[in-house]
Length: 242
Image (tube, rainbow, N blue to C red; front, side, top):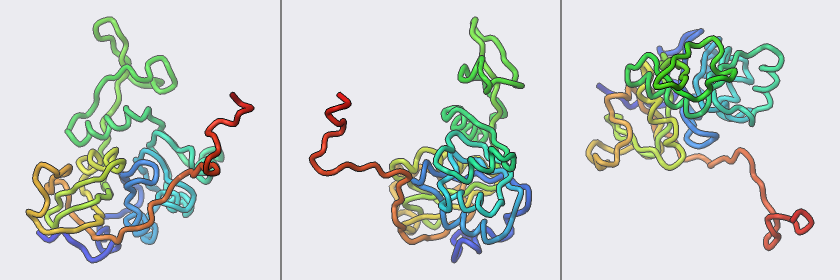
């Protein structure tokens, strides 16, 4: 089956519909599938539930879909870098399901492994546990969390072959690998597209069986969410603060 598509628009063609659930990989601005996000924005699809560790920043990554009001609900862990996200949430325009970061990662992994639910101590006795089943194991309380599975997952890889075998680089490995397994269809954008056999089998993070469509993308500028600098030679902590 031919998996390589000419561009992002073609790669998501026929996969999008209003009200669907999409997993979007990346951590901060590292490893985000930005070209696929752009194609989703251009399609005009709306009322989306998006599962992602965070929501990008204003007008970058998922921030673009927030700007055009295409996201109805976010299932996330950290959203503090996006002013538009905060505005929509505080204004009652956007639903949010917050998760502890480790719980979110495990919910996605569980969904990809066919595990419908699991129990964790994280969140017991807090707002996180409200409305969820709490069960005792060995004298300790645990809260039940549901696995997550999406209609579509979009991921970014450093390298991939035409069969869909993927390799992620550094921080991009945080959520992309598990999301690639947890959807009906996974579409990948890769910076370096090679032929089968050119990737050492031991180096593969996501086997090609999980990937249905691939696009080759140009290497883009590596963005930074927050840049904090000081003049060369200036101490990290001002003397007056010591």
